[in-house]
Image (cartoon, rainbow, N blue to C red; front, side, top):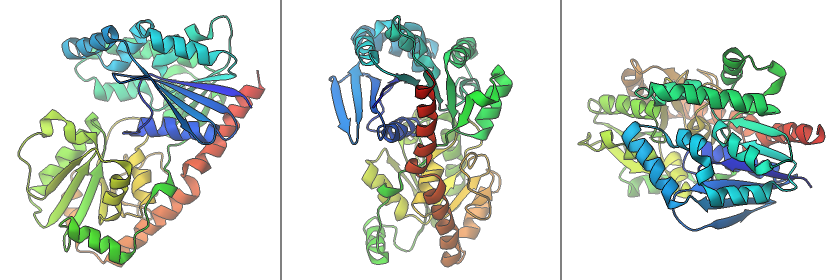
Length: 399
C-alpha cells in the first residue's frame, strides 16, 4: 500500500463548500487503495488528527498567530485573498510545514488541492522528488477574475503560481471539459497531461423520507401548502449575484417561499430587510441541509460565471429535486436541459418559477427522478473515484 499526501491551505473537514467536499471525497476514494494523509491549515483551534475509513487521516494544523494576523491584515487593507497570502508566506506556517515534511517521508505521491501549496510541497520533499498531481478545482485565472474585480494587481501572482504548478506537476485533474480546454489554451498544457475528474455527490447521504414524514416536516417548518424553492451556496460572488436575482423576484412573488442556505447568507450585503417569503437558513449541518433539500419543491441555480462546476447541482439531483438552472450553472454535470433540469436565465427566472409553481407536480417529479438516476449512475463519488484511483495508480506506477 503506497502513501499519498494531500496538501491544502484550508480545512477539508467538516466540509462547508464544494472545494472541501472535492478534497474529502476524492481522498476517501484513494484511501481504498492507499494510505492517504490530508494535511490542512486551520485558523485557530487545536491540532487534530481525524481518522476515517478505510485509510484516510485528515490533519488539522493551526496556523501560528503571526501568520493568521498577516492574512487578516492583507485581506483587510489590500484585499489580498488568503490563497495569495499563503502562496507568498507559506514558510511562516512552521508547524504545518513540519507536519507536511514528516508525512512526505516515504510517500509515493503528493497532491496539491490548488496551486498555492506548490512551494510548501517542494520544500517538504527535500532532496526526494516524487510526482505531484494538481487537483484543480478551477482555472484560477478565470475564477479569480470574478472574485478579484477590484484587486487586479494580484492577477500576475495567480497566473505565475498556476503556471508553476502546471510545469511541475505530472498530471492535472480538472472538473470539466471547459476547464480542460481553458488550461490547454491559457497555458499550452499537453492534452494528455489533463484528466477530467468531475465533481460529484455522496448519494448515500441523502435521507429517504416517506411522503407522510415529508409532509409532516413541511408542516412543522411552516411550508405546508406553499411552493418552496431552494438555493444553496458559499459566500462567493457568482452565488451572491444569484441570491440577489432571487431576492428581486421574491419581492413580487409572495405566494412562493424561497429558502437560501450556505455561507452565502453571511455576506454583509445581504444583512438587510428581506421579503417576508425569504428564509435565510445560513450554514446548516449536513443532515439538516439534506432535510432542507428533500422537503423543498424546486432547486435553483442562477449562477452565470465562475470556473470549475457547481457541486450544488449534483446535490440537488441526488435529492431528487426538480431543478431550475442556467445552462452555465449546469456545466460539467452531465445533466441535460429539458431532460434533467429546466433551463432558465436571470431575465426569465421569475416568469418560469411562476409557471413551475403551477405545473403538475407529477411532471416536476419525473424531471427530478431523471436527474437523480443520472447522478447515481455517473456522479456518485465512488463512480468518479474509480477513474481518479486509476489516474493515481498510473502516476505511482510510472515512477
